Image 1 (cartoon, helix red, strand yellow):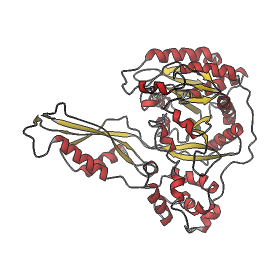
Image 2 (image 1 turned 30 degrees about the vertical axis):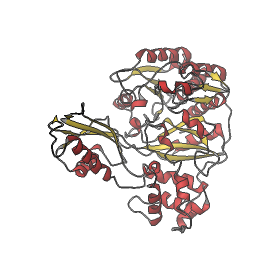
Image 3 (image 1 turned 180 degrees about the vertical axis):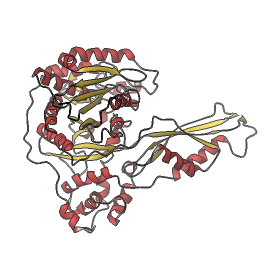
Image 4 (image 1 turned 120 degrees about the vertical axis):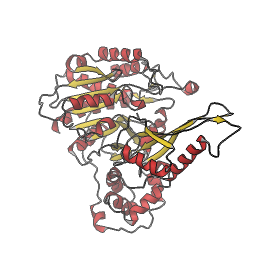
Length: 513
């Protein structure tokens, strides 16, 4: 899912931090507080969708056995695992493969899937649902920590176990199970619906999702009415101070840029070192860069997050939350500055406030008595809106201020995405669908994703402004998050039925958009 699966938990400690700083704050703006009322949808009637749970569980558990692994070394790619998985999907969902148009795409390797479910009204803007087939590896030194074999697809103790069952094959199969049910009923959507299943999300998605986004844009799609991808699952207690079940809907993502900074000079024998070595020059450049942090600012998605969450939290903290929710981007009030100052004290929450700088790789030298002729480092940036690769490169040049250092963009850079509108009809349909399955005793709020899923390849473009990210599976508690990229990845069998029911309901609800 995300490069660091815990990335979508970036807001989890915010409330704890702010509880230590918000006591005794003044209201600041009484009018704003008067408008700071609940935005939670009320009175949604719950529905129960009858699904073939036994068959669905069998199909998902079998899906886990296909080792569709994305290794960092892209030459280490098991093409047969993907081909076998494609064949399994075709056999498992005959109606989908009879009615929907299936394309196998990807550049340079075509192993991603694009399904087109033709709508009755071609004038309506299409919808798109995304999930990914690839999974992260299981390190050999962690195998003995698994209660069940990670690629066996074991069904035991009320759970489906295995690598990928939570991240992200439950979404693929939830979508296909629901589509198969709808097709058996003879149902056709009013608007065209696309399913995109990527092959390399765990390494950034350049071959799969990005290529498919390019293809759809080239085919002339001007705007999607709705796009949904994975993110945080539904979890009780996901925010400190909120005991009830909570569904977080990602509405924006930061970008991704990696730069190589390097010094290429003269090597030699270590017995005759120069006044400053190439490694020393590079180290000095890194030190300068880490001291030149990008300025803090409150992202509009964070303002939306607190507009939805704030009214549900402690009343004594609401002046602070309201100041953030109703603040203006071109000014910082004392309460907003207090919010920024406290957020900046923690590395998790600090990442929400600015373009981050992370030195992730360094390489120099091959022998203890040889001066290396060159030294290189890779610096990863997660940009806020407006901080383009050009802006970042200029920032790095100014910070280092050394003509001996070269700077090169080595990534398939993606900009910070557009911000999906949490007051749109599309968001409201998503919230309604969630409440129809999981009930009204559930807090639902937008949030700012500092990591990144493949949705970024769509949401960063003008044709997909409203992209919403959430993993529609209920977890028992926050301990279950350890399965993401960790050991003992699993989901509850009974909750998987609700995932299928959600997509079934969502397809129908989209007709009213």
